[in-house]
Amino acid sequence: MRLDRRRLNGIAEQGVSIFVTLFGLLILTFVIGRIMPVDPVRAIVGEDATREVYENVYRQLGLDRPMWQQFLLYLRDVVTLDFGTSIRTGQPVLQDIARVLPATIELATFAIIIGAGLGTPLGVIAAVNKDRWPDQLIRVISLMGHSMPIFWTGMIALLIFYANLGWVGGSGRMSQFYIGMVPERTNFLLIDSALAGEWEVFRSAINHIILPAALLGYSSSAYITRMTRSFMLDQLGQEYVTTARVKGLSRRQTVWRHAFGNIRVQLVTIVALAYGALLEGAVLIETVFAWPGFGQYLTSNLLIGDMNAVMTCVLIVGVIFIGLNILSDILYRVFDPRTR
Amino acid sequence: MDPVLDIQRLSIRYPGALAPAVRDVSFTLGRERLGIVGESGSGKSTVGRAIMRLLDTAEITADRMQFEEVDLLNAPEKQMLDVRGKRMSMILQDPKFSLNPIQRCGHQIAEAYRTHVRCSKAEAKARAIAMLEQVHIRDPERVYDLYPHEVSGGMGQRVMIAMMLLTSPDLVIADEPTSALDVTVRLQVLRILDGLVRDKGIGLIMISHDLNLVRAFCDRVLIMYAGRVVETLDARDLDNARHPYSRGLLAAQPRIGGSREPLPVLARQDSWLEPLEADA
Image 1 (cartoon, rainbow over the protein chains, first blue to last red):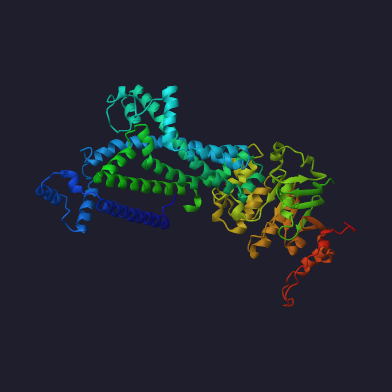
Image 2 (cartoon, chains in turn purple, orange):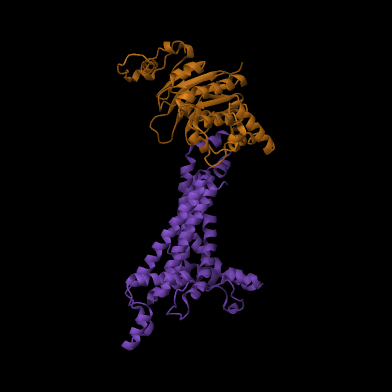
């Protein structure tokens, strides 16, 4: 790849747009922190603190200063990665996040591998067999994935695969028995247990992650299947597909060598979005499976008005989406020569 | 000499369509250049695609549809994979759409060769580059590595021609091969195609709505109207066409330096659906 002027400009342009987006995000989280009907001082000092104590804390938090100064203070905190202390857990928010986010990333990554690994080929098969029985069948399967509420499928699946059949582990990230056996280095349980060479813990973790990940994967594969199908139908109608067949390629070769390459860009976008949604919004499944993840953390803090934690969570979700966007931009360039 | 292609009473109906798209089309083709002309929707492209067996959903009936020893009506798809691209191929209209946008031109040409001939990648590349030279591309090595969006329309169509003639097929169907090109490069591309077709002794079906082009580059012409062949004649006799639809088409052509009167419009009549029987 040549690094010419046009490309440098492109990179600079993207850098600026990321910066602006980030700044906007910070304004948003700051505003959320101010307009929520939660008194941050009262949340800290409690209901029956004296007026004197209250005002002391009020000043310490900088709430007596003008708004723009408060925003600058907030910026300073964010830049120095000081997100304050969670009232609910009594620990620095950053430390909490470092604990819950890896649990969710692990789950979401497993889920998206299942979802994309299942959804993409199903979508292609449905498109190639449009209106014939494989298409109908795949449409029903994906409609089911769309329409069944995940907390319900979660409970039913637990009942069948855990309680009745005993194929998988139950709730939590691993069996009670193993908790505390593995030193927490990355907080990714699979990585930590592998690093420590504790393969029994590793197996237990796999056993526990497989069911919720499969359910999440199924529900996002429904979306991925439908989108893949429509992208693929679009490409199969293109002339270059006819060219490929005229050359004497079989249908299968035409689809995978020619048409599929042209849907990768769109596919990357929707898979990235689905992944983002999994990272942010697996609250229901995390609750059903008692998975100590990010979604649960965000929700329970939101419900009691633990604003430091909530603002940080919103910020993280935003950063995740910005990151996924950058990633898909890079992948566009890899997959489509016209964007280089 | 045996005809390359022998088609008798070919009819094609798309599912759900009220009327067949093509009705009772018959012709034979030797090692010659046959033009099929007609307005949009007259069924000329459909005939081309039916010969290539590319119409998966359409209902195709014919008394006879023979390409050399291959019975196109009954040949299994497996046999067609061997025929398509090797013994018959098709040049499509617009290289902007007919080339895969994310693969290098040369790769796409070489693929046409490697699909039918077992050979090393290097050999396929050498063949492709030699073929690019034959379509008058000056620096074939460079063009080999370009993506379709990096070449001009004329060059893209020459890439297409190279891809489709690389295996030296016996029959080439050119479906409006120059309609998408600039007028300035049209003739150049046609000359290249014409030269190769003559050199290799390929049977050519040129589908077009350009009467002048067909007159200049074909031996015989079929005139299609509403899915039927209404008249068949030698290209040099085109001006003496007798069918009222053919006459209408000829009359509707502007001429440089001609009068500035509005051109006549076709006044369609049901009787046009009857082909000329006399000397066909």
